[in-house]
Image (cartoon, rainbow over all chains, first blue to last red; front, side):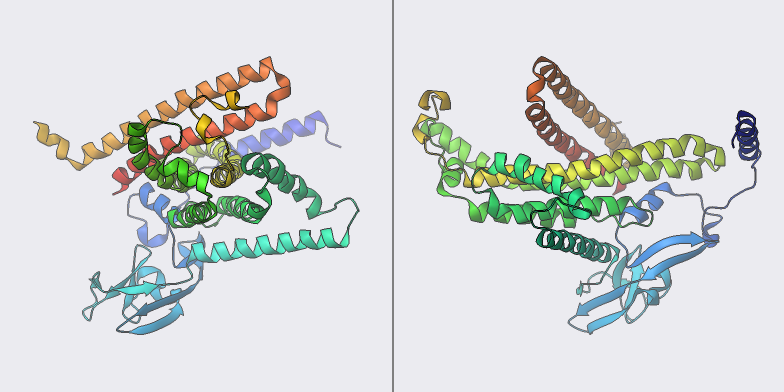
Length: 356
Length: 79
């Protein structure tokens, strides 16, 4: 039974313990104890890809999961080995070494040889995290599909009941209004990118999570997929609007042509940049607030840094689903413009109301 | 005297100012969208869903443009 006196004494004791805690905590790993703290490097290490999955440091010793390094060069052939051979950048192995988490070839004297060309198809932290989130997505969606098969005509339950409103929202409020009657053939892709981006955003926010959706190559390929689908499902009205806009005078058509062609490429480009910058910026802000504690080298800075970092992290949870939604919405918009069957081409100048 | 502009640290300062101005533009733009969206929801609460969707699309597009500027400033500051 917690009486008011108990609660007061507990709070007072806790406050005293926190305020009188003055032991020094060394947060840097032991070899770098004399180096000044470099916040830029700390942030860069957390944002960028790495050949091993670094989990945490205890007493200066880094605990990480080594991942396979797969390299192919025309001179040396195929090399597959564990990234622990690089010993966190201190060792050279089979003619390769790590330079700030990038693999470079070394010549016979041991210096980095940047002109050597090799293909790096290693399983890095981002690749491993993407595989994990793909497996998670498969497991989840197969479970839900199974539930639908087993519970035909029954009310949904479990994971099915949680994800059904979300899936129906994508179908009824994103795909159908944007694409129109042909929405069904685009639904698998839209649902895939929504959940894949959402799950990758969330996994990046976890402790020791990998920054997958903040990797510009990842977002580039998603935007490329959208671009390819838009281009290959486009009907002749789409191309007519771009190349020979109906309903405008001829000189304007010549001017609009290059603008529309550039616009065809800037739309997926902006999709790529939007997702990348939102997620990376969120991570950088949280890391900066935590880094403030180490810049000022006092534990009392945490009273300022931790609440702000917490607030930004909660905001990032919202941003995770919002950016997935925006990516899916704009993709559906582009699909809709590609397959939109437009019959009133000659009435463009007068507007649609006059034709109806 | 203008040679001071070639200093690397001035470039980083420029990147910082650029990011600030970009955020200013995004804040003003999205603020206007939010304001008019809230106003129109107040005038016609039954159309809330459509207005919310339109607001989110416009806000995301404008934020995308602001993030172009942020990415450029990041590139200047870090490399």
